[in-house]
Length: 154
Image (cartoon, rainbow, N blue to C red):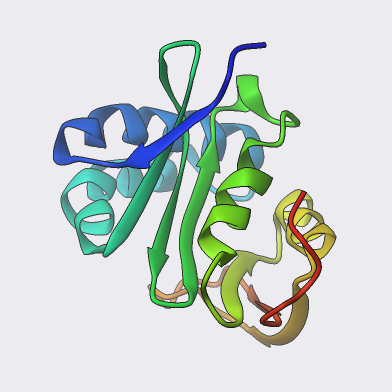
């Protein structure tokens, strides 16, 4: 396995990050219809990625394989190419995001239990639940928080 490199994202990365997002969501978000996924896919490079103040790319084998978007203390997005799931890249990205910050927050789709388990394994705790997502769609969101100085990530 090659070394993973981490760097700030640029606008030139948006197409590759959108493809990573699409592959990851298709593999993990079976509660979304193909039409819903395509709608989000169109919005990602023009609406969602530009709105995230801090976007970090993970590269392996000479290409982007994952990314995390941070908005202050909130993990706004974290997606890893499914071919690279289980290799610690997501944990590394969260660990880098946690360094030098206070508590971290993240919202996770309730219908994505693997993501919920992932964040719990990194020391996040559930602090609440909303019946809808940020668009008002009926996809319940679990609100999680990782205390400052929580357990080391990885």
